[in-house]
Amino acid sequence: MSAVRGRFAARTVRVKAPGKVNVALDVGPLRPDGYHSVASVYLAVSLYEEVAATSTEAAGITISISPASTLDLDEMDIPLDENNLAYKAAAIMADVSEHSTGVHLEITKRVPVAGGMGGGSADAAATLLACDALWNSGLSRDELAHLAAELGADVPFSLLGGTAVGLGVGDELSPALAKAQTDWVLVAADFGLPTPVVFRTLDRLRDAEGVDVPEPSAVDPKILQALRSGDADALSRVLVNDLQRASIELAPSLRDTLGMGESRGAIAGIISGSGPTVALLTRSPAAAEGLAEELRHHGLNATAVHGPVHGARIISDTLL
Ligand code: ATP
Image (cartoon, rainbow, N blue to C red; front, side, top):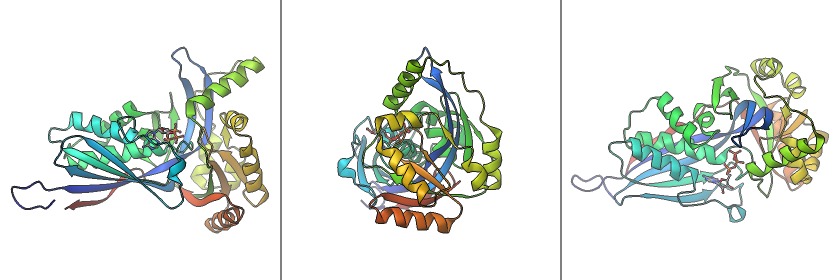
């Protein structure tokens, strides 16, 4: 393709969007509509998905995936059709854009698939922003956030980034303005856990115990205080994830991963969202790098990251 007058001029907009760790995740009882209310603190971390959206002369949406070196995508089950969240995001943007074209989405995956870090949601957030730019839709961030919420509970957060409290099903977001950095090691598993199965397992465990769980309505203010001051020790005492025991019930090896991290210098460990990615908290960037290195020597897929980081952002816009 070239930009010669009269011929189709292809353009590529490249966007990166972060994965997330839930620093806190309180889960309420199963609601009659099949969902669970949550009270969650999201932290956007420096592990990014990238989506390059290229306009195409032929109508329609196509997708390809490039693995980043840390992920073995052969093992992963990522749909390349209308079931891909990025496809759905492009389709929604095409609906609201007057000048949409065909589009090819090339997704560079770094966030573990079905890992509890919202990787598909990050792809959707990146695609919304890329197609908005590609087709000059002129939507505000609020309008994009509205479309994001239609795609999934975690999509608005990947657009927003930073630190945020999520209520409702996680989609009612309030930025938490906690900018101090915390340093983590993420340990990706070589298997995924489907989020609905993890929620069902939690319901089953709770049913068996016969305990009534209250609807969550707020997050512990100590979590936000610790994130505001970047006090990793204070944060280590208040990390909470109600889904963790369900993830461990489904994948008992996660207990060993948590134990290995904690015995080698992490000050606390938590499963991210529905798992199976384990997030290990450390006291400094150097401690995170050191721990990641050591865990890699033991054969684990470990990466040092920090948070909070910005939400979805355009990194280049090129006429081909
Ligand atoms: P969440 O915590 O948001 O439920 P997750 O981070 O655990 O999700 P994802 O990697 O977002 O998991 O994907 C979950 C499932 O969704 C995958 O197993 C895959 O079948 C499907 N999927 C749809 N679109 C994508 C995408 N763009 N990337 C990865 N998986 C996708």
